[in-house]
Length: 320
Image (cartoon, rainbow, N blue to C red):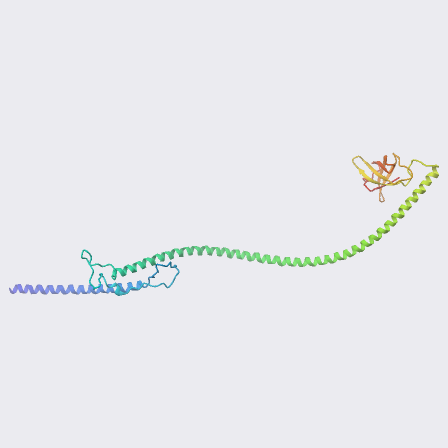
C-alpha cells in the first residue's frame, strides 16, 4: 500500500510539474496572442484613419481633398461573437456560435476592407488619369516647343517686317520729297507752258497774217503770169501757167497714183503735164497728169519713179 501511495504521489508530482510547464508555455502563448491582437487592433484603427469615406450619393472628383476619414476604435474590434440585447452569444440553427453580423469584429473589418477596396479603385482611376495627364502634358510640351520655335520665327519675321517697314517709310519720305520737287518743277513747267502757249498764240496770229499776205502775193503773181502769157502768145493757151499750185489729197501706192486738188487757175490743166511734188523745202518727186476731173479742179497723176526721192504723202504740195 505504501508503495502504491508513493507511486501515486510521484505520479501526481510529475503531472503537476508537467501541468506547470504547460501552464507556463500556454501563458506565454496567451500573452503573445494577446499582444498580437492588441497590436493588430491598434494598427487596424490607424490604417482605418488613412481610408477616405466617400459619400455614396455624390460623384466626388478625384482631385477632391480632405474627405472624411474612416473611424474604427479598438472596442469595435474586441467582440468576436455576435451578442443579443441581453449580452448573450447568438447561436445559429446548428448551435454554432455566430461570428458575423452587426457589432462584431468581422463587421468592423469588412467595413475597413470595403473602404480600402474603394480607395484602391479610386487610386487606379487616379493612376489612369495621371497617365492621360502625362500623355497630354507630353503632347503639350511638344506643342509648346513647336510654338516656341514658331514664335521665334515669327519674331524674326516681325523684326524683318519692321526693318522693311522702316525702310519703306524712309523710301516714302524720299519719294515725298521727290514728289514735292517734281510738283514744284511741274508748276514751273505749267507756268512756262502757259507762257509758251501765249507766245504760240501770238505766233499763230502772226503766221495767219503772213499766210494772208502770201495768198495775196500768190494771186498777184498769178495775175502777172496771166498777163505775161497773153503778152507772149497774144491770147489764151491750154498750157498751165508757171507756178500753178495744188495739194495731194489721196495717195495709192498699190496703183502708183495720186489725186491732186488744183487751185483754180486762169488756164486749164491738161493730161501729160508733169507736176513737181514738194514737202516744205524738200523735193519729193514728180507726177504726170493722166486725167482731169470735175471742171479741172482735181487731177489724177501717175507717180514718176525716176524722179521719186521719197514716197509722196497726203498734204504734200505740187506745182508746175
